[in-house]
Every structure is written in C-alpha cells, then in structure tokens.
Image (tube, rainbow, N blue to C red; front, side):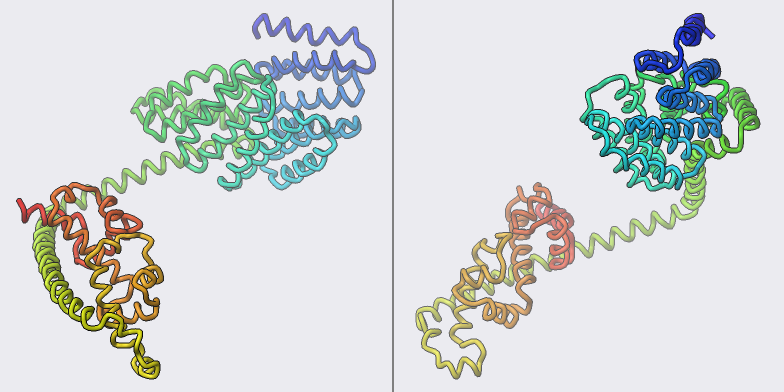
Length: 532
C-alpha cells in the first residue's frame, strides 16, 4: 500500500470518532467519495473502514450507502456471494429510508450481483422493480443517469442470453439517456460502463470493428473517472481479443502487458482472463517460454478460484476460444484446398481453356445473330413504312366509319388495327420507348387508342406481350448504339441501362441476355473485336 492510500484510509477511519448517532449528509457524501477513490485499488483495506462506520452509524441512509460500497469492494475481490448479500442489505436499508433514488440505485446494484452469479431471471425482476419507481423522482438529470444504468444492465443480461441485436438496442438507449445529461465524473463513469457493455456485446456478435471502437471509447471516458483502472483493464483485455482475431498477436500482447500490473491479485476472475489471453497470444508467435509462464499462471488462478468465478470467466474465455477455433477451421479448410488443388489443377486448367473457347465461339455466333436480326428489322421497317404511307393516303379516318356490329364480330376494326400498327411503326422509329416511366396505358394514350386494343395488336402482330415488346426495342436500340457509335463501348453498364430506359443495372443485364443470348459486356467485347 502506498503512503497516500495509508494516509487516506487512516483519515477515513478516524474521522468517524467525532461523529455520533446519525451521520450528517454532508459528512456521508465526503466519506463515500473518499471510499470510492480507494476501493478499486485496495478493496480489502476499505472493507475494514466500512465495517467501522456500519457498527457506529445505524441510520438507514448511511447504512444503505455504506452497504452499496461494501458490495462493490466484495465484487472487486471476487467474493460474489458476499457482494450479493451486501447489495440485498443496501436495498433493504434504502427501502426503509424511503429514498426512491437510493432505492432504484440499490435495485440496479442487486440486479448486477444476480447477473454475476448467472441468476438472470432474478436480475430482470429486480430491474423491473426499480423501473416501477422512476415516476417518483422529479430530477430529470438523475432520471436520465439512472435510466442509462438500468438500460446498460439489462443489455448485459441480453448479451449473456446471446440476444445481441436486442442488447444493441438497449445499449443505444443507455448512451442516448446519457447524451441528455450534463457531463460530470459520474456521467463519465457511466459512459465508460455503457461503452464497455456495448463493446462486449459486439464482441459476442463478432462485430470486431464496432467492438474495437467501443473499447477505445471506454478507455477515453475512463480517464480521471471513478474506477479508471478497473474500466481500462477490462476494456484492454477485451480489446486484445479483437487484435488476436485480426492476427495482430504482438499488439494484443502489448495491450495486455500494459494492464498486467493493474489487475488486483485477489481478483481471480480477471487474472484468469488476462493470463489465458496472454498465453494464447504468445503461443501464436511461437514464444514457448512465455506461453508456459502465463499458462501456468492461468492454471494457478483457475485452481484458486471459486466455481462461480470459473463459470463467469468461462464466458469471457469462450470469446478467445471461438477466435482460435475459427482460425483452426480456416487452416484445416486451407490444407484440404491445397491438396485438392494439386490434383485438380491440370484438369481444371484444361476445362477452363475449353470452356472459354466454347464461350467465345458461342458469343461470337450470338453477336452475329444480333447484327443479322437488327439488319432484318431495319429492312422490315422500311417495307412497313411504305405500306403505312399508302394506307394513310387512302384511308385517313376510316376507323371512325365502322359498323358497330362488325366491330363486335372482329374485335378490333381492321382499319383501327392498321392505324395502330402504323403508329407503332412510327413509335419504333423514335426513341420514346426509352422513357423509363412508359406504361401500356401511357403509350395507348399517346397513340390515341385504348390499352386493350394496343395490347391485342402487340400480342397479335409482334408475338409478345407489352413488357417484352418494349424491352426488346430498348435492347435493339442500345445494341445499335454500341455497333455504330464507338463511345458507347466505353460507357459503364449502368449508363447504358439508363440510356435505354431500364430502371437498374441488374434488370438491364437480365433482359439484355434474354433478348440477345449474351451479356452486355460480352456484346461490347465482340463489337470491339469486329471493328478492331
């Protein structure tokens, strides 16, 4: 124990002798602050001081606050049953004191103690009991801080249940509640607690980058806050797991070594985690001497631990085991792949060469078919165009003179059908089909007919439905552009899609291949080969 801590503990203990009966609130606040400065560093010594105060002052307010700190000290030294008993006593005293803020804090503390011994249902019910009293507090700042504490504790329970997405929601609620509170040492400490819980949750979910970010934030908020060493040590141990996953083994070792001296010798659970992580990382860099050293320290800490410590620590060690297991599985898969590759390499190479030769020939043939198809369509358009001119000169408005009874017999009047075909021919020679919003009803309106007539004419004379008809016009259009205008061969597929009226790259590529038999990129390549 350093000289500073010896002086502080002596001052705390002997200051009690001039106080009698009920401890004034101002004095109690000073004592609790002094205890909190030391309890994470010398919890055994502080327990003696607390017991001195508990035997002297019997008022419920002082008893509740002192039992809170007593529970904290027991937690630091790994005595979970004693920490639970002290938390229960603190809750009882707070209830008798009828201080709702204090009672809510003790509910949060007790829930934490239940969680530490894996009594999740009890922890949840205790949190609900605390939540039920929030409406009895008037100070909004205090409510926000307490809400953050409760949300964080509940998120930890969800992480233990591997409900990572739900835990993320509550961790965010905890941080949001803090954002509404003015920064102070208490708030900084709670920020560190919330980010640490969030990081552990992301670690369990294998969201490595998010976990790393939250652990770094934990360390930042822990500076000059209550229990700085405890939060920093926890964050760095977990942070090392991220580095191990990233195969940054030396960085993981350096991170762990930086906090080795800060791990309290009586905290077997934390020592187990530290030594196990160090041993595994030294093993990864083939440092057998240090691996043996820290593996023995891990086993020694494990042998001196309680069953509860081992069970609790196993959850943390499982994270490292999962990382190492993933690596082993990847190595095994890699070995199998290497062996298989040697056998299949020659056959695979031959197959690939043959495949690409066949593919190239097929693409060339399909490309030539597209060109021939476009040329045929061009000739057809020319012939149809002459017929249309003749028809329009001879029958300008015949569709208006039809007998209604004949219409019923034929469905669409012959002259109306011819006029729709004539207008479709003009439409095909335009670029109106590149309008991405062009629907059957819109086109029928533009052509001065109804959707039913237009659909029937397209099906009868074009041999396809409206969607395929428009899609084929768009593909033919973009194929012509690629063949006749070299700059189109340098455009991205997405640009070609939009240029021809398609809503997305994927739709364009699918339709293009359905119409031509080859992909847009293959068509561009063939057109370059032909012109080259």
